[in-house]
Image (cartoon, rainbow, N blue to C red; front, side, top):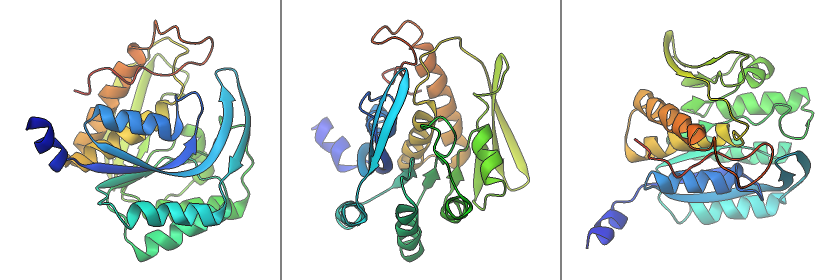
Length: 253
């Protein structure tokens, strides 16, 4: 009876992003994180990638027709309480999403702009960057790292979470900017190579908290603490060599 009651009131998120065969990042990680928060995760696949802890070996985008069909299948038949956008593989996918969000105002959208050199040294021209900026305009929150913030420059969104995990420091400082207000979330940087998928984990955790009903500040705080625990819980993880995943199975609060 308890399980049925929880299912009846279950919240949902949609992850729009790529498939990582290792499960450390992308939609596999997003759905795992959502489940850890008791949220039902769905996905719209943008691309399949070939990667391992030591190298990024390729990416193939899904066709525009398949991309549109997935959007229709999910958003046309399911309640969506929150969503996140991760890796968008092509300009046409960006345009499809912008058109969809223009016609269907998104609720609790988190955009994690995967446009830095960590993804196979992809090159983005001015049109692509401008499309990303337009997409960010529909977001409640954008979560760029330092390099992505520099590339995007001005971002029109309700709020921006500047992630400080890549900074050369012993302290990690994430800064949430909502208008003129700045809120800092500080933690000690954990020494480990098992940090693959940190950005995906952060954005999907925030989206999950928003779906549950937490406000933005609380969602970021819970997600920040969860990511730190997931990194700490991965220090002794020995399932691979090199750049391994986080431990998503730690406590959420």
